[in-house]
Image (cartoon, rainbow, N blue to C red; front, side):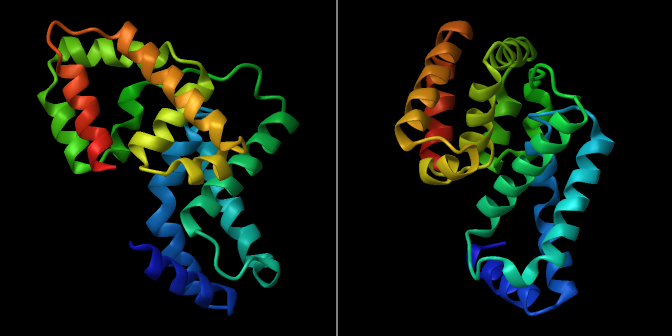
Length: 198
């Protein structure tokens, strides 16, 4: 769904159209679910938080901004709600590493083609390399390459300044490059392809 369609649904939802909110929820559910997996593996907890997010949006629709970037707004709101809930329930002690396999649902068609071409051994090595990143590095890799967010959008979602986005992304990519070194230069080719399509 393009940004213009999202904006139109947002305006209808703010005017009291429950079907428009339902359409936004359906179109963003997978993205929100995959993103929430960065913070917890409890699927039921994630589903509850997403449902709570849309219920809260419905009850507060009159006080919401008129036309935000809908995807960024939803990611940011879910992140805040989920972290608040996890802290309150003391479920969060240490962020769990994210398995790259769990992120595959959010890949672009080009990235899926690259993933398909990787050998099983290289897939395993790439998963291990991503799992070796810090939780913040995993989050920024997910937002940039799996969700295709710009640095500006990542700044809003993660609540960090633009230079921190670039530094964190650079450090994560550098670590991936040194951790996951296949026999060929396929990593650089795959990374270039992903960067060029986003």
